[in-house]
Length: 243
Image (cartoon, rainbow, N blue to C red):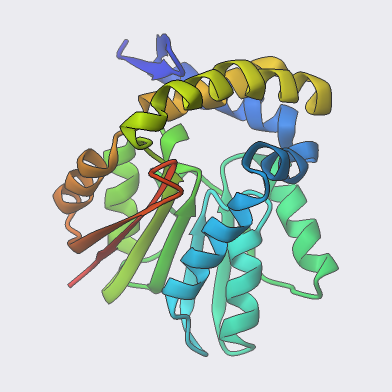
């Protein structure tokens, strides 16, 4: 059996999806509260930057992969209007249920689908925009997921991947202390789950840095790949186009 990483731990590839599902099943109810606490609200700024650069137009077809609690899908549905097609997907049923309920609370009835990003249940050349925010690092085969996102995009469409990345070097030590000491403590106090937030810190360190992810997108077929570092590289927005 092939091995892959689950945080800093090596596990069988077949086990990673189950373990990631366990993490997000555990934290789903407190996910947005913890995001606000962990980032001091900055996750809303990072998502707003992504939404602004998406340049969504009425009638567009949009897919939010690993969309969790539905922040991007909700914004895109409001921007694109009634004639659009907006899908919220996630592999985790607990996260997807929270996202669906929040969309309904906002008066938005958009389709949701529980699916694996490595095997998207959508036709070729269908979407104008695909987004994945803070989900790519949890995928076992990132190259396969990127290839699937490329497949379902129309020619001229774009992928926007918002993800934790490699922080500016002078901040690295302080960021490590925060990640490995403060995050698990917050997770225990607020969500009753220190281990899931320890995994979060570890998964960020195992995720490809800005240049490596840009190269992976190019290998998956994307052109004109751009990288925007946010908050000194704590997060990066990668954008690539299908031509």
